[in-house]
Length: 400
Image (cartoon, helix red, strand yellow):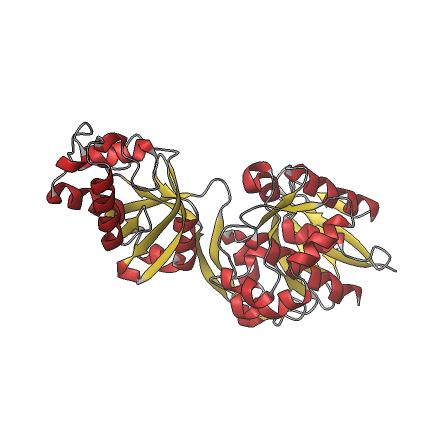
């Protein structure tokens, strides 16, 4: 007789685990509270689904995880991005590596990933039950009683992959697990400053961002948005310092170097340009690797007439201009969610999980994976990779 598995949460980790389970051994139900499954997969990467990242050495891969890096080393040594690519290729969903090493389906559509999962589940005759909210899980002698808004289910095994909502963490706490309170990770910084006015959509190939108070500096592409600043340089800082920024109530100062040149090097570059092109107007001078719109705004904020010849720019004006470009201080006054890809820092205490198979050390025949754990990563496909790897370990353990 088949054993019953209930997967609580129809997201990335839950589906990947179910897709790898042995249908001859198990009868599987996936319970999802929303009307549709795999919603984060659908919106990831602007609807293209950033499946994983081309980082194939587990020792390098774990460096992208502010929380969980030590624990994930053994997980990734068993299933890493190369294995993910092979898994999808074997199911006729080829993936491609883009220039920034992010990995997407060749179809450029997240629907390819969703269809693949649904097909696997259908072929195994596993059941997907949507609009089903789990309210409580009770441990009986040898099984679990799962109480939902549509009735009760009995399970021999629980796969708990709910994401990190407070309600889902509360259910685990009631079963004896300890949790770390969840706080947002991967968010953009809200800034009101005249330098950024009228410039949403302006991007920088490489910039440096630091929070002096927290002694952290990151670099990478940067983007001006309607609300302030975003892009990988900002998102990396928001992930690494998620808890500290929460404690600061998202009120702090950042320093931004839009050119990634030191102020000293920028002065040399400016002086050389001045010598070579003295009669050029400063407004039409392409001195640094920034857009024309941003350069015009820099001049306006520095109160420099764009029609002025470069030779006429005073030392004081040059200083003002380069200060804005290379070491501008902004006051951050809040955060905004990065797109719709809400990620949190916090969740189940990692010491309560056996990372050989993702089983609970507190509860028998109970497996936990995905964002419900106190594990998270920077943007770029890393959060999904943790889900695939953890889910694969659970399925391998259950398949025996």
